[in-house]
Length: 143
Image (tube, rainbow, N blue to C red; front, side, top):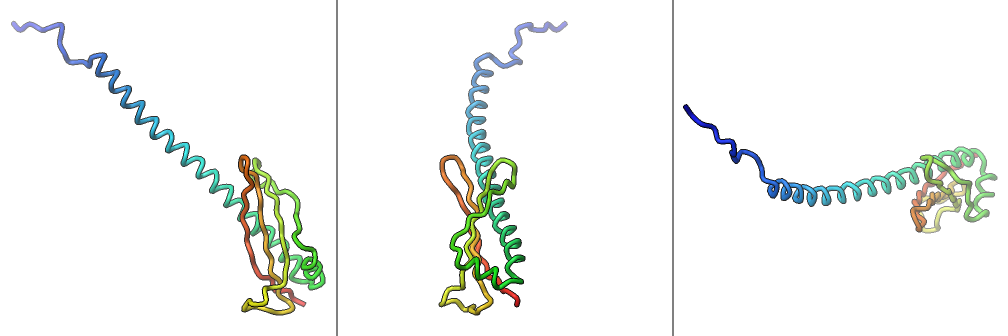
């Protein structure tokens, strides 16, 4: 008859388990910092995308008002840089939209009495700094 040893070495020692936990902790610290950096990058990308969305939305709104009124468009040309309200797009950040309506530059390929250049900038606070995105377009005003 065969005898079984009660003191078999089939398990892991305390030292091996502790070493495995230390290695696992170092790996998790590296991955967690990468995850945090990725989350910050995604949040910044979302803010920039929302800023561009705000400029496009505002351009479409202003274009609709300008297209059928040369007098309205001309009144905006002489008004300088105009700040237009605060828009809350995503519920957590406030975007301020500024716009400037000008005649196209003299050296531009596109010139004409009925063409205006529209520059729209969306600004928002990110921590202690102000960030912004700017979009420019030309508007043809119908008479």
